[in-house]
Image (cartoon, rainbow, N blue to C red; front, top):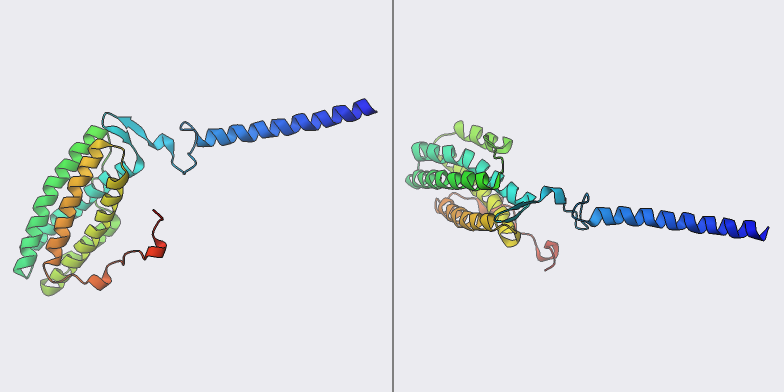
Length: 213
């Protein structure tokens, strides 16, 4: 009887060890680079080694976002240069279109080097903005042009700054460094029209909602 009890206890111990090993194996699989995800939630299979350093999801996203920005801001800038009511709006439209043509070429060159597929169409939101501007004229066009593009540049600037702060890829780092300069210049140009409604822009996060540093 005692031997049966000992065997039963040992069977329970073995079962416990087996469960522990299975759980440990799954945990290790989940946190290793060749597993599904790291402890920080990064999908490691989304990272790729390149000659300029590791290329991650955020690096690819910023190339896509800048490309899409050019796809609608080039024609919209040209439209403002032709149809803007105020002289300053026409000047700003021409400046934005010219810069985005150059930036778009750089975006495509960098994407080709890093083997990143780029879109050929603006996003659905950008297309709605283009449709809106197409139906406007005079002061209404100028006002919508300045505010739609100022809001869009603010969003791209935030993404560029985030990638610049943490990218591991040297080529992407150089690209976003230049992009930050261009986008900041465009924000300043748009604000120089005197038409930007700053109260309509997203507010900066208050200190209590910012990530701890």
